[in-house]
Image (cartoon, rainbow, N blue to C red; front, top):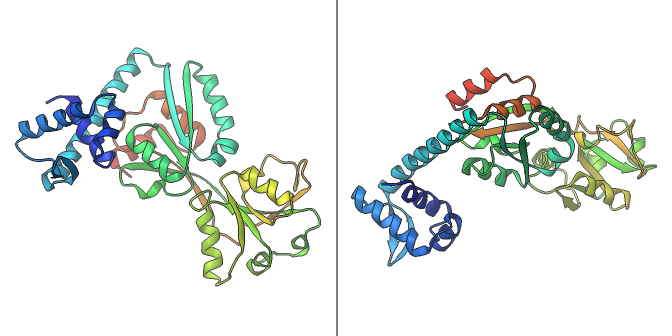
Length: 313
């Protein structure tokens, strides 16, 4: 039994039993992957995968249990490598952070700046995608840390921490009729075309829930992942924008600089959002990873993080 066999089993399950894709991930050949799987099955005396002819179609009952053990073994092997690097090169390495565009654009710059000052020899890899992909990257070990508002708390193998709360704001062109409403209601908003985030991004579910619970039909004419894009189309007169409050917090007053837009508070209309930071349960975190987490969420101590990692929650 060797680690290459274990990796072949794990990646086969991850890649939907497509051995060509597995071979590409492992930088080997398809016959080589097939041989690694067959040799391990022969050594263990059980079939790990179900087959239709030569094609793999799924996991057998024993295979599902074996895959869980393989995941743990490979995770501990990765932890061993990280621990050795920790002692050999305490302040050298790469920190991979998977996050959404909104977090990367508005919340992470000061954190990254402070981290780079403290650890100038650590390279930061910012990976931007949807919350679902962020979770997958952390689970697979491609990313050390995941940061997003939606979805991270739903995965059993992730340990996630609430970091800060925020709400949505309403963005309109200067002179818009909504500026005369005090307060603005959901019915008021529904009178206009709306521009907001794609499904699954930046608290979009809370926007949809609010209108659905009030039984109000909306006309969402444009969606985007980027707060700046939403604001640009609002400035063009295409609709009323619903934007994350942190995308506006560095502006002066209630006017968005340079584009003639105004901001209306929307905290009373939509449920509060919680941005969470997640790491893989059981993963070994290097010292500088703890430092980055505490830069992003100062209320978390290293002891808090370690305790949650042990408890798995």
